[in-house]
Length: 177
Image 1: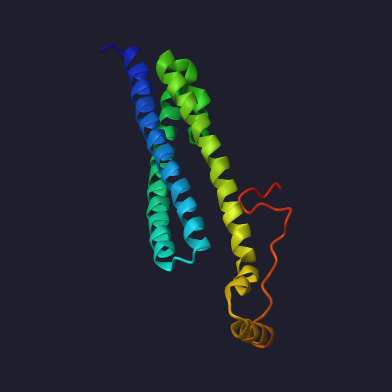
Image 2: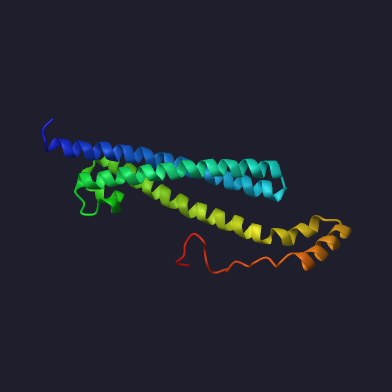
């Protein structure tokens, strides 16, 4: 292999590796979305075993996502160096598109779009779960017997501080809102 071909092949190889990592990230996001649905459903019926299992599974998925994101960052930086970016650690898939075969460029572009859409969806799911959780204690009284309601009201009034209210105009995942 001649020298001019080596950097191009390196770029294609690194891009292929990056697309595989991005595919795994999209799969993990899909799994996480299902776990969030499972958590909401388990919470609605107060199935504490299912809640615990779902939280454990969510933690494992998050750990795998962290690992994949680290790999994505490493391979992205290597790809940025292979392309010749001045600041390879700021690599973006769009930086590589012109160096790739059309099919690989399309695949990577689609994966970026999928990850972006999944991130928005997960943010919305987390926000819904957060809002449901904030109001859960208000709704618990409905299911208690009248005597238990009185007990909860008297204990809440005398021994527990008031629950903090989250600001309604701020999304914890997007500080710009």
